[in-house]
Amino acid sequence: MSLMECLFSNEHITNKTLMVWGVIFILLYIACFNNHEYLVYCRNKVHKFCMYKCETQECSDFQKSVKGGSYYTTDIEENESIEYCPLGFWELSHFITHIFIGYYLNMSYSLGIGFGFEVYEYFVYDCASYPDLIANTLGGLLGSYLRCRAVV
Image (cartoon, rainbow, N blue to C red):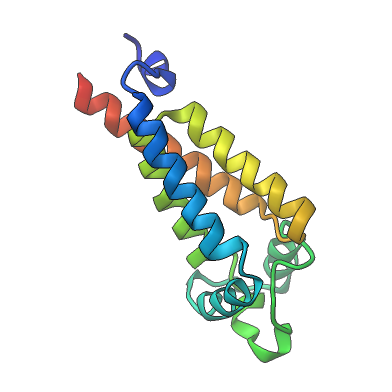
């Protein structure tokens, strides 16, 4: 089996695996998205973690343009560090989550779940983020690749 076939292979996915992941996503949805106050509290706390900070105003303007209008739940003046942070906790959390999705499911599931949630965030909360899509894709690729390497 080629690497590309392995990345998208679903031979290893059982009904039990799908049920476990389904329960995990339902619980995450209930815990995070269904409780708006918790979501706002969590987002305000994690926006303070920045892995890469923009050095220029152009970088800051670009990173704000690829995130939904309600991506920031606080006034930027309250927390200036988020204005200059294109790579922070949310992107890291998406990357790590999709490593697991890619490893235990496959690249198709990672792409579907990642894209699906970003569309949901766009229409429901106006907080979708293009960098999240990149982090999802890279995490899913790494997880699927690690599973393929373990199988070979």
